Image (cartoon, rainbow, N blue to C red; front, side, top):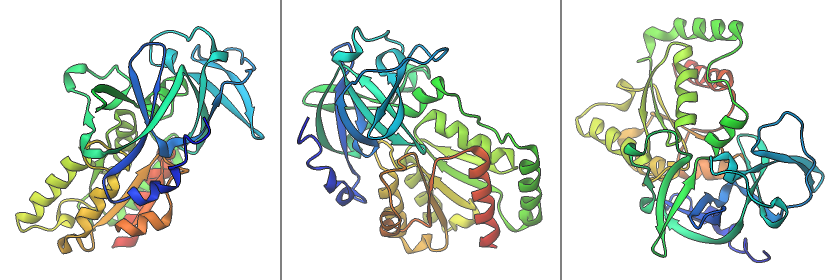
Length: 314
């Protein structure tokens, strides 16, 4: 696989251009799947694994990669298609996000493609919510299904949606009560992953904030521009916006850039919220004009971050 990541250093030049690089791969069937290259640290042949007792069936074991012990997950089994026939004959995609590193077993890695986010489409609502996809696209006349890795991991290692520490919940709610008369008490969240969207909503509603949801950047941009075109301030509708980075049709970077290019958004707080812990930097955030980057974290940490941001904005 030498040379597969030759273009990876060019990724930062795509920021604000509504483009992404996607790694294409196959599982047991002929269907092509994709994952954002920003999530990928390394690709190698699957090494020998040490099994873990009482783990999820999709967890094939652990291995040591360059001094770090990582959990290895059979992606084919994790999304409900049954185990691969031989892990040793498969490729291992090492990914990092949500502050963790894990490896996904895939049948074989194909290649990297450069795409525009407006060619990425959300999965039709008629497909329900039991699938493990965030979106779909088309490459070389083939449908590519883009995996919702956050949903995959949430089924293997469930994360709490609500704030678990009662004392922290009480403190944050009390701090918000002190400024509630000075804010509109409403936050706009923009997130395509249903798992991540539910987590953000639960965390913010837990401290008494109203949440309005949009599932991609284009929806959010159209919504906010309609408010501005109506002669109103965004601050009169929302205290702030929290946007994911990876989204179909219009990504978070391009959403922020588009808003910041409109002088009417001056003073409106915009936070980027991402699972790409290894692929973002303050420089990129500053370039598009976001106020801050938050790497996806525990509900109480997110709620505390938002409350502090609101307190400072008064």
